[in-house]
Amino acid sequence: MERFAAEFAGELASETMLVEGVNDESETIDAIARFLARLRPRTAYVAAPTRPPAEACVRPASEAALNHAYQRFAETLPRVELLTGFEGTAFGTTGDLEADLLGIAAVHPLREDALAALLARGGAERSLVDRLIERGDLKEVRYRGRTFYVRPVAQAPSEPPAGEEEP
Image (cartoon, rainbow, N blue to C red; front, side, top):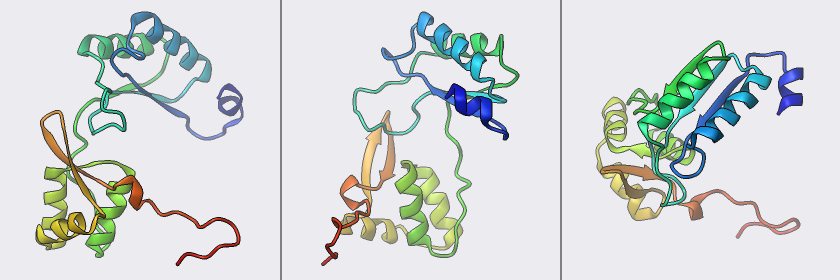
């Protein structure tokens, strides 16, 4: 990372996801801040999990830990931003709403209100989502009191072994 940062000619950014019990202790945050100071990113993002994580045991760090990280990073870095809330419902559509939903859900869980807004912008009914769930292309999950839609891992495209064709 240090070599990349030294050679990279563009604008470098970092994102540090703080997870309770993993990297939210004061000493760890201080060590991360020292490391980032060596990388010298233009912007350092401090994040907390806001969507369903891959592991059910993952919990966001406390507000105190997030604040400590923000303050500590800001001591040596030019710009620090928190990523701790809902990103909004402003997803765009290409006109192929099914492909758009599956593409977004493949990248990150799609919150129910964001999905509803996307359906409304695309002029589609909830039945599209119900069909995708029934077909196994989308899965509904609950996280911290909210409903999200994700692509099941089994639905990720896979390549056949070398020399074999897909059926």
